[in-house]
Image (cartoon, rainbow, N blue to C red; front, side, top):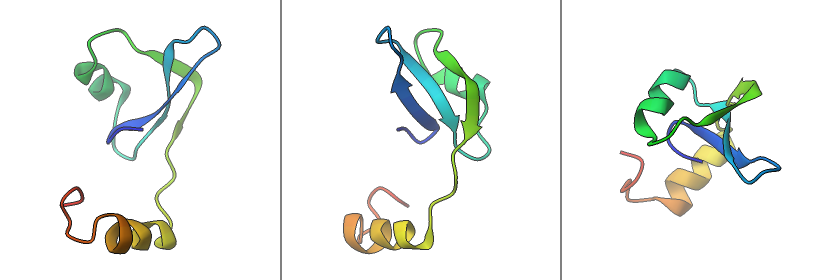
Length: 69
């Protein structure tokens, strides 16, 4: 997972883009990667975090906002 999308490795071991975060394009991802990244034929949009996931991030994982600000 990155700040642009979610990746998995396919059956050959190649990294594949499976999901884009809201507002991100495949072109934007390709601009940040040094190779022609494989894109899933079923490319999806990453669902937004739930209220509980946001609470966990803000209160337990990064209470000082080092990574989220």
